[in-house]
Length: 135
Image 1 (cartoon, rainbow, N blue to C red):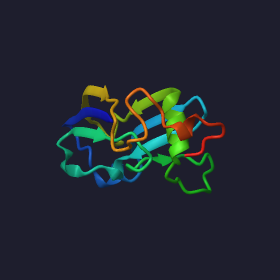
Image 2 (image 1 turned 30 degrees about the vertical axis):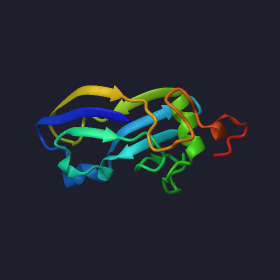
Image 3 (image 1 turned 90 degrees about the vertical axis):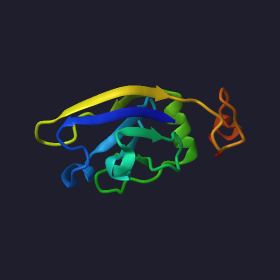
């Protein structure tokens, strides 16, 4: 799970203009795949405290690397392989085209068993360790 606090000191995070075109979090793996968590996927009632599960079924989408194609939900294999070898990790701190002040604090990456009993804290699912991935 990715957890953090993000509070607008001046300006507005959830404006109609920003929610449709910004990604709250972006992760790119060394495999060249980019996964994003769109701002429109976030409830406005978060009070600035975010907790985003790091799994393929929690609202993440994958960049198709082609402007003509729709962004889609990544497969379990793609998600695991990207998280296993991260090139960069961004949390959006600029939400509008105007002036704003944003405070980012308490960024945590929490490992845990989660809801999938097929793996533990230090272990990837067996299906992702096969070549090719069979998840």
